[in-house]
Image (cartoon, rainbow, N blue to C red; front, side, top):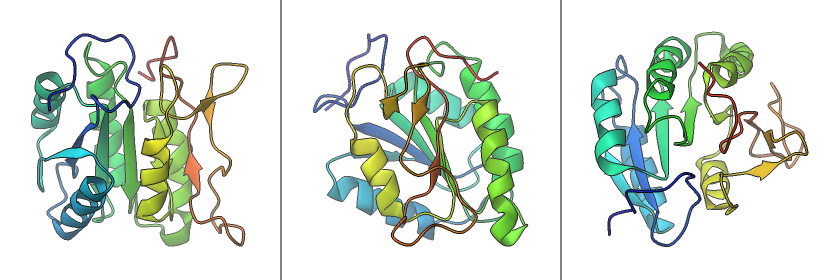
Length: 191
């Protein structure tokens, strides 16, 4: 089932559950993509898995071609911040990419527990959510939240937020620390 081609916002609906899944250009790992694809499909999403070491232009082409409800970038090589920052700026520089929710998670850098410092920078660059030390189920919960105009909940200032802000060490029971500050409909482009 193809998502509709004309829409001004990207809410998740039964007709619009296509996810573009990819690594960053320098990441050759595939196990994370296979796992995430199976998990997403198990939860009713259609997945276009672009595979490892994906050039930025291929991600941009997939967004243009498929008009996904979201893009999910998974990285485990420690270059997530560098490559992700460059890629999100390119995505936000396209008409299709302005409203497409884009999530990144995994190993964002080589600082260990301190990789959380990259989350705010990636949000400022244009990501809708940065999953830091979180379970893949947190991604599923985030994608499954249905709201008119965007994935997530809006604060009075039009800024998306979650119950758990990013934490270097999650509080007991907080298994899904996600940083989210970019609004979808009418929000800043992040570029």
